[in-house]
Image (cartoon, rainbow, N blue to C red; front, top):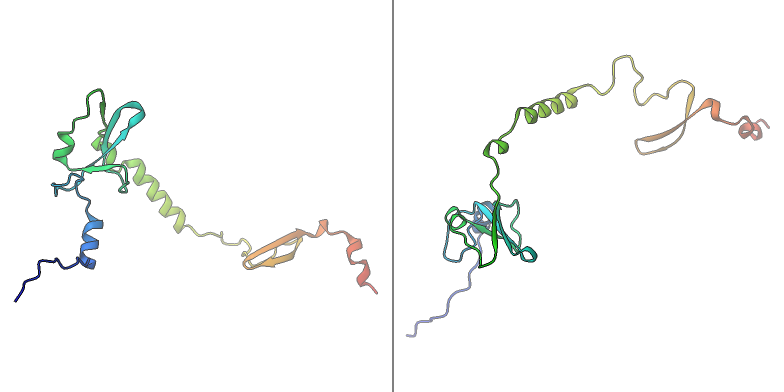
Length: 154
């Protein structure tokens, strides 16, 4: 009996996909750490830029774990720019909460005041000229030329 040394092809399971999307890993080949920062290069300026983790994984950027981002060195003659955001700036501020509360109040406010004509009513002194779906075109009765209706008297 002969044993096969060939490997079976890997078949991705749905759980593998969810795990890879939900948590990005360090780009270093032997590291399994969670990514906390993104490294990119500006070749024209000979600069390596290390900043907070990017929203999306970009093809020419490298996601690094905490250890590798701390130990990062650049080639001779290159400069490293480390962008560290202020932790207080990342938290929601009172302005953000106030803007959210105002948006909720605006959405909850009635769109039409009591006593005002409903949008289905045509205001006095105007007539409906055309309609397409929920949109209407209105014109003032004063703007209609009287000679337009002269042919209908007969």
